Image 1 (cartoon, rainbow, N blue to C red):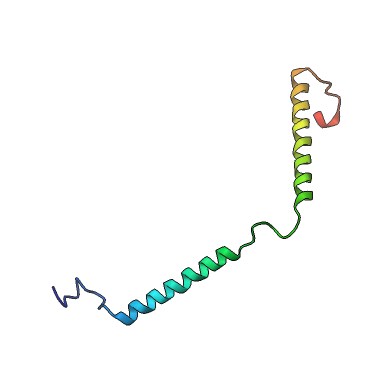
Image 2: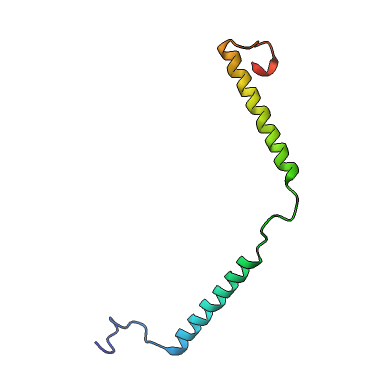
Length: 83
């Protein structure tokens, strides 16, 4: 089987193996550095966005609750947003 192209389609080469290992090492080091240098939190303050979204969600939940109360007859349906 020695030298048979079926069992050994690419001849072993130390320089080729070294090049592949060097590329793998460089990519690994680059990936680790990229992970280490990632910021833990955003640079800008998102408190206003979170507060606005929370208030919008609460308003929406109140409206849905009032619509359910109006549908079941427990509230007045004359308000425009309940229609």
